[in-house]
Length: 88
Image 1 (cartoon, rainbow, N blue to C red):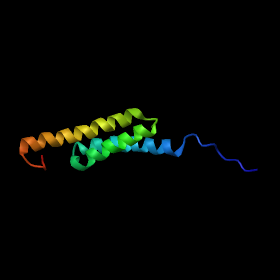
Image 2 (cartoon, helix red, strand yellow):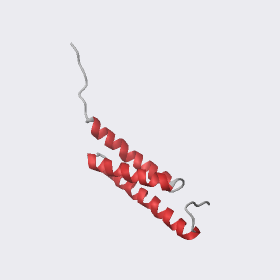
Image 3 (cartoon, helix red, strand yellow):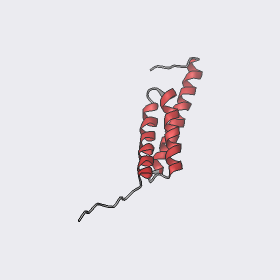
Image 4 (cartoon, rainbow, N blue to C red):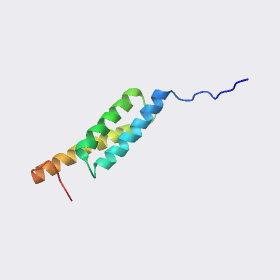
């Protein structure tokens, strides 16, 4: 007799949950470094996670917000320094 545990979540939902967490982490990290790269990636991952129906919508929305904040910080420093890059 072959017994297997039933799958509790679909793989697409699990992938969407991973994307939500990744968008949060990348958005948070993007506030400190590489906001030109990490901000848009965080926004894209959060959007896909929300579109796929993640079970962690709060983290996806937070990742989306942090990704947008990354880009706003970049724009603010670009206006202050008149350059594309900034440093502490």
